Length: 436
Image (cartoon, rainbow, N blue to C red; front, top):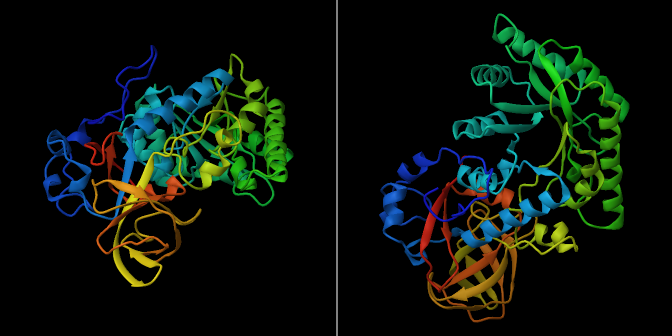
């Protein structure tokens, strides 16, 4: 990591960092979104000039380095106190430098959702990867088998939720090579729920899937997985009851399969960023000398000023709240009628699927003193945001926006500046590269 998002001191036993040197040598180029012309060099050379935030253009997504470090340490400590591990979902940021921060804070490994994301994780040296999805693409199956055969210490887990998925993996392995892989692929049986996403719908059905895995010569049964967040979307009593009931069925499935597991270590995994307290409460007791319980929370690192601010367990009394580590700056480009200003940030720049941005600060320019701004973003178009406010705003001024849902913020940016708190015009200490 070229800047300060990586902790300067790490505890004993911290895994080695990822292979990030190439990021310092990368050249963002003159066409990189909202970066200054001076960034047409290597990242390392650009950061050595101590660029200020005022050198960047708008719209702009900005990360707070101190908040990132605090959030990483906060959840790592919370998990350690409860005896659960953490394999944060890398698809939230798709930023290896931020994965490195999470791993150095004590994460067991990184979770991904697609074969292409898995390739990124392996390319940057992640040693433990969980693909929280069914691996049935023939090319991806062959690549995973080859990677594991070539590296005995590489650990890759994937999920299955039907006998058909087991058959598809077997067919892919059979068509990809003349003989079975030297090391059978480890899979977790996925339990779902009615109205949810993937996953066997009942414990009995999941047991049949497990039997198909055990019967396979090229797969081995290594645990159970699932996602409670697909069954609820708020923190109402009914939603929390649905989550808890689902997690209790996961525990039931794990106990039913106790005599069938084929791996030295068994993984039980659930937990996004909304209900990880429930996951720890219900599943942590399953951990023992052989069984590891893993959360997969991903949004906690960046947090937000919207959906997760309201639903995070730490906002519901489970601990000290996380800190939002992202915001956007947008410029006023038009004031066509009283009470309405158009900003130069739209759907291509800011998330909108879990709530619209919220106006927070108003300044004459990036890097100049800002004042609190009240108002509302009522809509976003592809490249514009509609700001309704009674404040006197002028064309050319800039607005800081709080954002909701980091998962759909990062995918809009290839290079994201990181700043440290202090002063109106902070130094940019890093450029985080994403791989969407």
